[in-house]
Image 1: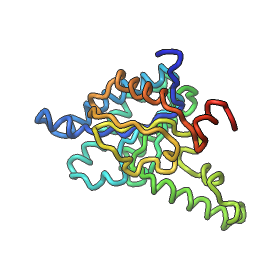
Image 2: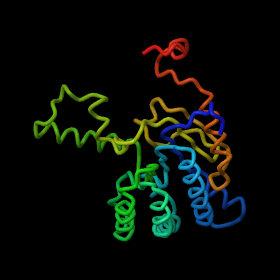
Image 3: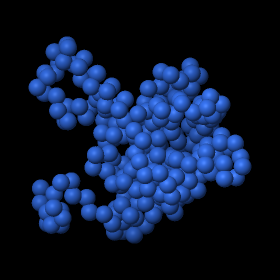
Image 4: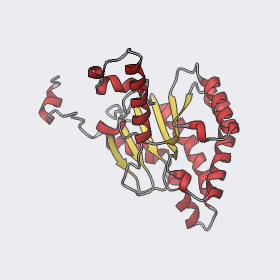
Length: 245
């Protein structure tokens, strides 16, 4: 990586295309998801190596329950297997793993495995890995508002105090850096209810590669594209160049 290349502090990825990757090869969709786990492992390691502070992966959306039951059950079993297999490796690499989303719909087995891995890695001080599972951006905003309303009801927060700033601590990503780079693989160009609040000023990057084919070099292409953009946050380009507040 060149010295000029700016590494995003927080990258989020919609890992799209596992099923299509398998279909192109006349394989069951679950084979594509298993192949996608291999890509997850590679991308986590590369992000950790280059100094990314937080990586958020969209593993299972709140809408994915609509998929065929065989695929959903296969994904749930794959979650358990992958977590049990990767937990110690994440700990050795000082990666803290956390899940965001409504885990109440998961089986007791999966919830237990999630809790075990979170507990194992909770003292890790390296990269934070957020796995968004049964997650939706609208859900995230609603649950944050519900928590804020509870604070109003007990008198710890006034209605007039509600703002973007006071909402932020109640979001599932409250304690990680702001989202810098949003990547979606698979050739689709939509955000699909992912990190809707957090994406407001992030840079978007869409890759034609199906997720199992999205290797380390394609990740670096996305980061190179990101590093060449001027992030203005409402300012003019000249203001950014001059370093004006």
